[in-house]
Length: 358
Image 1 (cartoon, rainbow, N blue to C red):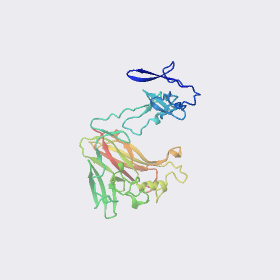
Image 2 (cartoon, helix red, strand yellow; image 1 turned 180 degrees about the horizontal axis):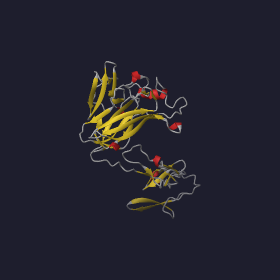
Image 3 (cartoon, one colour; image 1 turned 30 degrees about the vertical axis):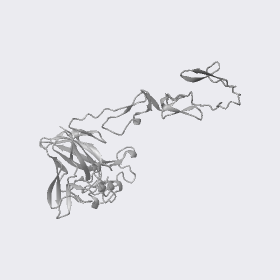
Image 4 (tube, one colour; image 1 turned 120 degrees about the vertical axis):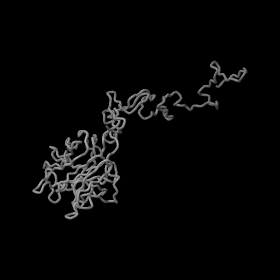
């Protein structure tokens, strides 16, 4: 039975049960229409700031990264940082954000990712991705040279023809009497990455310039003695940070598949120790050479065939070791040679020449 006493006591009416001050009802009082047997399973469940109670069973459903009856513990793979559970790490690769300029992130002994050290560039420099190099302005990117779509320039009359782009001058020898024939430097925006042979000598194998730009430079070491060379707009010299270099389509496909007198690199078995080398020298203010810097456009000399490669993308070549220079000189060599000289097509592509601030 439910027995309720009412006491009139200002300022309000209060309901008190006998002995407790609350309505006391026996569980078997079937005549009590106010009796409610519904149980709230979450009434006394506390899931903290990182979970919520499930009404169906009164358990805590924890946020990602948390566990425990009250969601107050870090789940496996998560680490407590302050008051928060954050995803932990097992090695440095778990922390790498793919950027170079903010340094190498590391995984600590506690399983936490720690920030790397920012690349320390001079005030006049900018750190550039993806290589983390400190550079100032791009000296040469060939984008100020006008070309029709899918075209090139390699000279237009017999003789030596310099062309200027950015803060640099390149030399080209062109012969229209016994050609057309050119050597030295040219520039292009052609995108053919599949057609083999000499008629496709003006394309770079990536099919586009470095940094996604359309224009790029081409170097050809020919037979008339015009060495691919560039001179910068300085009399005292400055330090070149580097440049992006790659194969031309003509040279790349000739080395990959063989073409004319040019052999397939590696030979029929892939075991021939072939290589195609670009040698880059600096030219200082006294016209003496510095360096060299060696860059292999192809290298099949690895003891493990999986280490053999042909360069097929724009690759940064660090030229800072050449010191303060006024120009660059390029020479190509190969293991594939014949009676008339090198059989490998003597071409390379270059773009985005950058300098280091003084």
